[in-house]
Length: 240
Image 1 (cartoon, rainbow, N blue to C red):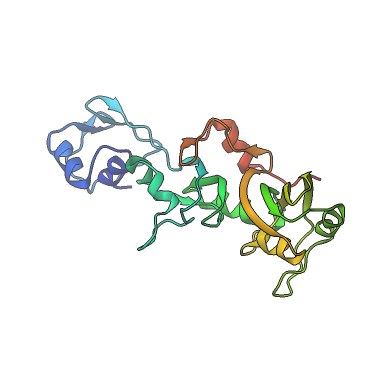
Image 2: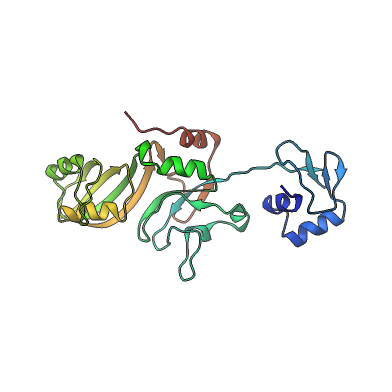
């Protein structure tokens, strides 16, 4: 990796600002001054310092975001605000992306990272990782609906979903439920309820496997994952 790229990624400034640091002799690699930004270094094994302070290289970033409604789950959009726009500029440097997709009007738990291997693992159908949502439903959700969800729902395009777990909290004119699915078809939960003649009026993802949304995070807030959370997600498996 080039030294100027490393320092820019670690928040030491723009390429122009990093060039000035190098010119000043502020940057050392294994106690040798580096002045050429094109110098290649090994960020893992080399000892890099700026004004004597060691630079610790982190190739990956992991954030838990409490997504609010009104934002699209994308890295960029020419017309609308995205979930990445909520990140501080320093946290955007490694080009993180949202793992999976929450609809514009859906709230809740969203993982943002630049770890492509982890993203693929969490989204792989082979893993059957459960994603749990809380929802308010227009219409009375019944035990028959619970059984139907367990068997899989035929959607409007003919696709039959994998079995889903539906738990009814309130069964009334406006019902409250928890639903866990192991796939992520377009507008899947909304289409599943539409198939049983009901309408989703509010939807919030609260968990991926046993990784739950931090109740200390307000809508639009995010935080870094701790090591225990990262290890859990890297080793997540479907419950047997």
